[in-house]
Amino acid sequence: MNATLHVARKIRRIATFSILGLFAFFASGEPRCADLDTRQGCKRFDVSLVQLIANPDQFDGKRVVVGGFLSLEFEGRALYLHQDDFRVGNTSNAVALELPADWLTSTASIDCPSYRYVRLEGEFSSQNTGHMGAFSGSLKSVERCGQQRMRPVQ
Image (cartoon, rainbow, N blue to C red; front, side, top):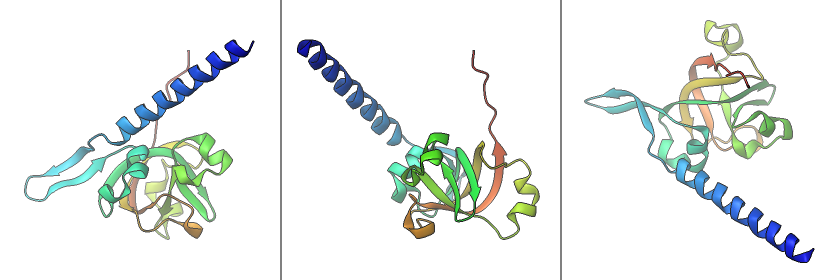
């Protein structure tokens, strides 16, 4: 019985390190330029939330397009990596949102329902960590939002 337990622990340890290795590999990947200006360079980057959280200084002050699970709660307006992160309050896997005052009545918010997976475009700030400093940065000057289509599960 002890040998079986030892093997199970070893397999779990290998799986954990493999997942962490993949996470580090994808987090360090080069960002894709979504809008290139030949004179000024990249005007906005298409990045994952993992890239923003893992490399905040690389994107500080830059326009990004990023997807995640949206929460528009009072003092909790944020884009989370996953719905489960939102549900358990894991704000380290989220960026705070600085939305314009007229956001909820603007046309930009029509296709941007709370508690859904969305893609947002805004300027990333690694310095502003949201309400009580709980988040891993913030998106300000959010201009565009679109709900992501979910593929049916077979």
